[in-house]
Length: 324
Image (cartoon, rainbow, N blue to C red; front, side):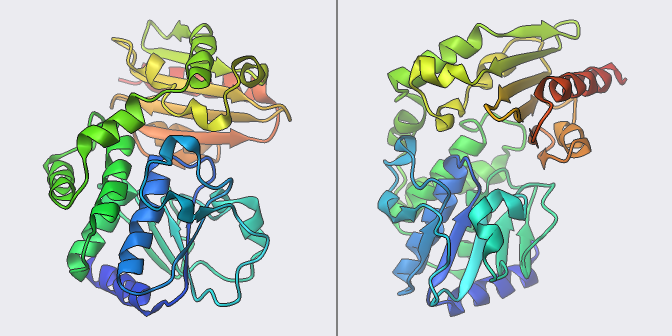
C-alpha cells in the first residue's frame, strides 16, 4: 500500500467530525463489514459517523455489532456532513441512484476492485488485498488506531465473505495474518462462520433449489451457468439479497473454470455475476460490457435486451476459454 497516500487518508478521516460512510447497492458482507468496521473505529475516537447503504441492513448481517447504525439512503445528506467516504464500491453509480443528485463530492474512496477508476478526491484502491475490510485493517495498523472487538468482528466478516471463507485466489499469508490478528482482537471465527454460512433461511434455500434446476454446462464442461427468473422470488419468498453465494453451486463443480449467474429482471434488464478459478480473467470480460470487479470475480449490469446480452457474455466466456 502507498504509505504516503494512506497517511493523507488517515489525516482526512481524523479531521472529520460528522463523516458519512457509504457502500454499494446489493451489499454483501464486505460492504456491511467495512462500513461498520470504520464506524466503530471512528466512534471510538469520539467522532460521529453516519452509515448509509441502499435498503439499509439486511437480515443475514444483523448479527454484526452496530447493525442498527446502517440506514437506508436519504434523498439529501444532513447539512453537518463534512466528509463522504465510499467503501468497497467500484463505481460512483453503485453507491445508489439517490446519491447521484447529492451536490457533495466523494472525499475518500477505499476499495480493492481493480476496475475502480478512482472517483474520489483521495483514492486508495488495493487490488492485491482481497477485501476492503483488509484494506481498512492496514489503514488502522498504520494509524495505530485501536481496533475494538466490535470493529474486529466487522472487518473479519468482510475478509471471510469476500474470500469465500479464505478459499479464493488472492488469499495469501498476509490475508491470514490479518484474520488471525482480528481474532486476537476479539472476532469469533466460529460464530461469524455460523452466521454467514450455517444460517440459511427456508426462503433462501427454496430460491437456491429453483436456481439449481436451471444449471447448464458447456464449453467441454469448462463453464457452467445458472439463471434466476423474476418469478423465482415469488415462488420462494426470497429477496434479492438471498442470491449471495448461489453462484458457488455451479462454480464448485470439478473441471468448471468459469461459473456465471444470470438474473433476469422484471424490467427487462440483466444482472450478471462471473467467477473464475484462475485461468480466465473475468474482470476483462466484464469490462468489455461496461462492468468490472476482479480477475476472479466480476459483475455486469444490462438495462435491456437480457437474452441477447446473456448470449453475448456466454460467447465471450467461450472465446476466453479457447485461448491457449
